[in-house]
Image 1 (cartoon, rainbow, N blue to C red):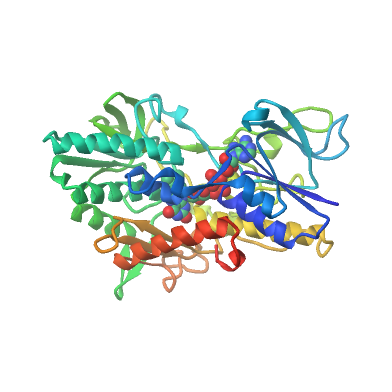
Image 2 (image 1 turned 90 degrees about the vertical axis):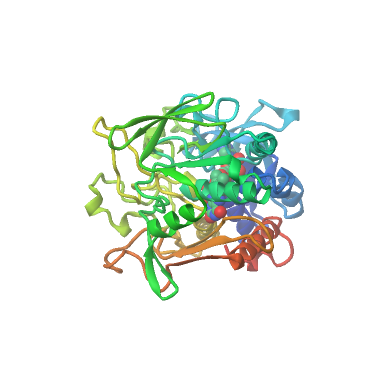
Length: 485
Ligand SMILES: Cc1cc2nc3c(=O)[nH]c(=O)nc-3n(C[C@H](O)[C@H](O)[C@H](O)COP(=O)(O)OP(=O)(O)OC[C@H]3O[C@@H](n4cnc5c(N)ncnc54)[C@H](O)[C@@H]3O)c2cc1C
């Protein structure tokens, strides 16, 4: 019997575990280790954060699903990887600490034949003093954060109903953030909700972002085909903001958040203070802080992980200038170059470099987006890794058989811009490939046939459909594997 251990039950890890359970032989075992008892469909946290959905609608308990499908679930967080075993344990293992209340704090060594690190991001609020829930700003990164944000929004709406003016600050809470798309989605949903509740005239809404221009989205922007002509995503996004009366500050690093005021530095060195009554600012991401040790117990974290805590995989990590970045730098199989039975799909893998052009202030402060690894590619990576491991375990192959490079795959993103069955809208954007490939597509780096965008009511219905479809799939209900990533 062989055992695959999956760390993390998010988009990537849960997808990998589901397909492994389907593809592995009867005697093989799939173990999932994840600290939360629930699965969270994170994209719909946006709707929780504007009060349109309770947190329970975007989460479900994992244990019963895994039990039904013969996947062993340990509610715990991984602490360290021992890819060579140790003096006492003669096989690779991962050290975990239980978070299940009945066993909280208990340590265990879990042996593996193959390990998938799909631990996603650490939400690194500490990078900006005063940033984050419990401090001076709000978030929608987890269902609980989003529920708290909705509660504060409700209180602000009450104030506006009483005639008070309120200022909302939404965006990225640090110069090195990723996930600009999520911040964009929150701000347009917020604006729509304030309008629906009849208080829009009492609200000032400011969007703050580390993007050089709106519509960069951490992928260096894109040229969208729409209605027979091509539009830069900056124009597309600025038009949406102008139509909705949203102000914006680009090229911005949030240095500190004090109660009611954000301290901002921009690329040209300008220092600004922006007052707010409510701020929803996303944190930068880093790896979750796993350590790695060799057989003798010596630490080899630096060999296995990049300095930002993400796991090094089959990417080209040579340092080179933006002009020399290439599509082939991006990983295809997500296999560790050091340990062939170790993989890292989703946000957990270390990207070779950013996708957006890197920029910094005269003092060296980086203010440009880190590369996003959104839901669709994260799920595709998880599935590809599961396929490779299933083939390696069955002896069909010595190495990975499936690939999901972000430079060879596209992504579809439906960004809600207001949730109402009759008056709602969503911006539907497809991009192919995610990482521009100027060798294949010299004009814009992307295939114009598959890179397009549109905004309208149909998009909103697609977004609702996706919410239900992906939750159905994640619950592994009949026919789940036929639903595309
Ligand atoms: C507010 C918001 C809105 C978004 N909207 C969209 C959208 O509309 N479309 C889209 O495509 N993408 C969207 N995204 C991005 C999408 O959520 C991510 O791409 C996706 O979740 C990444 O999957 P992942 O598996 O790598 O990480 P995650 O889904 O974050 O999963 C990581 C898992 O690892 C677990 N974990 C953490 N630490 C440990 C540990 N030490 N040991 C074991 N397990 C651990 C976590 O609990 C979690 O289960 C959004 C993101 C945010 C924050």
